Length: 356
Image 1 (cartoon, rainbow, N blue to C red):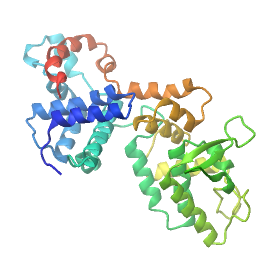
Image 2: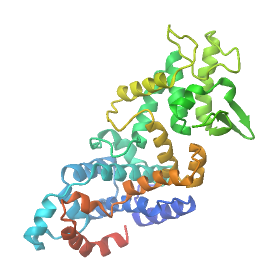
Image 3: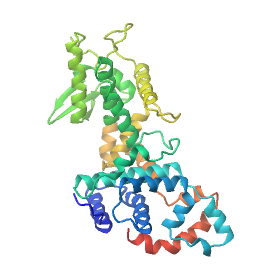
Image 4: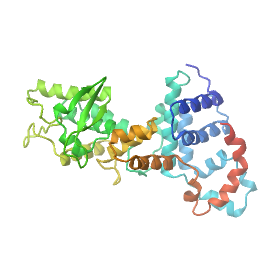
């Protein structure tokens, strides 16, 4: 793996990659990594390390005005008093910071996968300041990884295996808690080359819809059901619940949607995810968002979520584009003074943002 960070070449290759993957948010992705490229250039950093990633996010959060001036090539000494007040009040929104972080992580993951450069964001993740609160009722990639890592660490017990399988299935398929509750062992079936789960969807009486279960998720679910068999707690009928209660009150009985919600909420609590906007149903929103982030188109995501209309799915895409879109950032961040900073930004934008 080369240690030289060829930013112009990497940027162009990544743009081509996004085009081939048909990313509907390609321009937003590129817009969110451009500030980092400019930051490297302004700081004369040729071989970025994870320390540079940490410093970049520390500057964005703790020195936002200075960083904004640097990235947009603004000469502070040349601006008016009114413009200085606007600059001094500038703060990056929490969701903007999270978008920058998520998109950089995706970019460096791609670089490492292509054997071009190591993923320095992954090394820095534990030390990157995290803004407080969630703008949306969906988990970001880092929260999902943290949640699943914790659950995987508990799989030495039957309940741990069940909870890991349940939450992994929810976040990779977008199943609702009621659908997880209704799921039977027989609902997991082979269909062509795939393993699917048949679902009794919202407002339906029959299990006439299905969702493809990803390979690793299938193995985790299978590990749980096999462990149940080994423990003699089974599945002596096809109508046995896929996710069973293992408490004393309802041993081997079907988990209710409420019980499943409690399991998910407890997992959030265990890994420090605290927000009134993050609920058990957020795993469904997370599935939709991650699908779109990773290249799924609207029709594919609609089919996974089983929305009757693609317009419902479009809401997720619109929310995602809003999260990734920095064009309105000044209006919200600068206390009605975006007009002032927009004039300043335009002075340096042509030179700095034309090429990364």
